[in-house]
Length: 425
Ligand SMILES: *Cc1c(COP(=O)(O)O)cnc(C)c1O
Image (tube, rainbow, N blue to C red):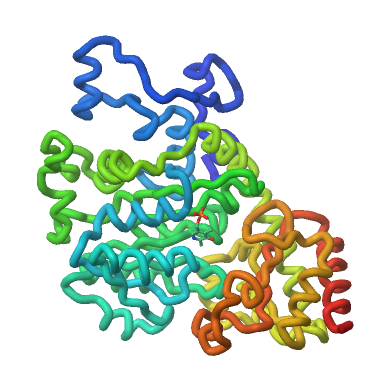
């Protein structure tokens, strides 16, 4: 089946769900055992089945299967947020004394995790400039356990050459982990370009309606953990799980089996079945929304490009985009909803602009059906000096817009009016 069909049908088994056409929600903490043997088989991973909702849940299982298919992976694990997905994805293969190599343009939450929090647990990250492959090769050493990038960086909107990153990671026997939140599997499937693990904040486009927080980890099944020779936790007995060896027991699905059996079991950020249901409902229209987000964003970006009250505009769909050849290769069918631009004048003009927007919602989300505007220099990054702002890839005029799926003429009119207001001080 093709992508749109898979998205709409959500991997449902109508007969197995009492012919309900909508995904059933199973609000249960635990599952009854038929007898002692059944229980013992479930605990021993001899038989497949649910034991306790922290580990798995039938509604969440459907979400996991659906996203794994859309990304082209062998399995997935849904968790309670994008940050939980990123944390578990990394901690599954990185421990104290190990290192990560990541691009320095990451989403703020991930940057903090890697730069500030993980070092407290003995895990160091070497940050590299996105397209500097020499720097990348030099940053990798014998302690490195993974390379971590984003398909489209948030908020800088920078892209990386995924195939090149995968080649360099694989040459060093390392897996490439990629955050595909902003592209979504509709616009780009990084596994097809060599990525090994894909993570998402499903809070954004997959849920799509600003109603639910969630995250997911997808395993391509392609990385050879055994051959790499440096992932003992996957290739030697797990003392905490009856001595099983993940690569032997689960083959291609070793990584995703371990992240559930060990990481989710012990750290516990499981997804609620209600949230899984809402995310599945979002996915049913993902293809349509991503088309409209991309079309609207392109029109808004072109409008802004010619606007006299704008200093600059960045959108991967514009030919002026710095790595347009990467766009042609990785995002040929649309470039998602994020557009950034600079409003003429000082911070006070920026504040006047954002406060004059009537349709655009001033909030911290993205990938919602509604158009959303944020002004980092006056809000999330307010404490930073001008020099530190520039280091973070943000300038004092920087606006981040997530273009929604409303009528694009209304979005453009709102921006135009607010821009005119921004200069009346
Ligand atoms: C929002 C976001 C996250 C974090 O996800 P949450 O669901 O908010 O925890 C991670 N990566 C990217 C690119 C994001 O946009």
